[in-house]
Length: 120
Image (cartoon, rainbow, N blue to C red):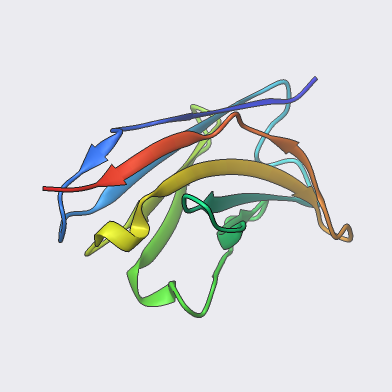
């Protein structure tokens, strides 16, 4: 059974960089054909896909967030990390990490999510 767990600060000040880590157990982030994604849901709004890092280490980001987003990984710890720079209160959301099979339209495993509030 694959499990994902988000971790990181719950409060970030405006203009700072939000940094979250997803720790994966029960499966390797380098296993062929799996993509590891970050998704967020602002209060009262729908899900927004942020980006992913592939099993190969290649990354792809949402065009609307690309200039502020970086996703990296630590294969020795089986973790991948989201960094979102220059945050504003509009970046307040529950942030999720999730896994998707390459040729699938849907995520098959999700973390529980972590609320990040951007406020001074």
